View (spheres, rainbow, N blue to C red):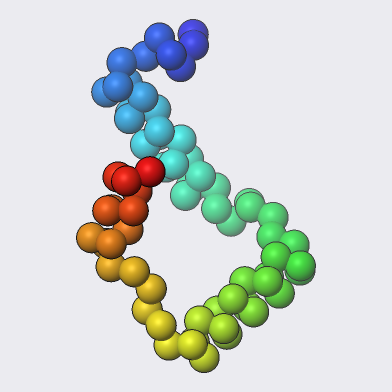
Length: 66
């Protein structure tokens, strides 16, 4: 079976099933110490900056323009 042969509905269902399987198995995801350090640095930077980022409407507009 090729993904291209699936209907859009079948693709969405497949994506949902894949995501659900990742969520269920999330405890088995290996995160390196390097990744943890990077995530902690990004979180600290975000907390210091205080900038909340872009609104959904701004993000949606940027995505639709590209």
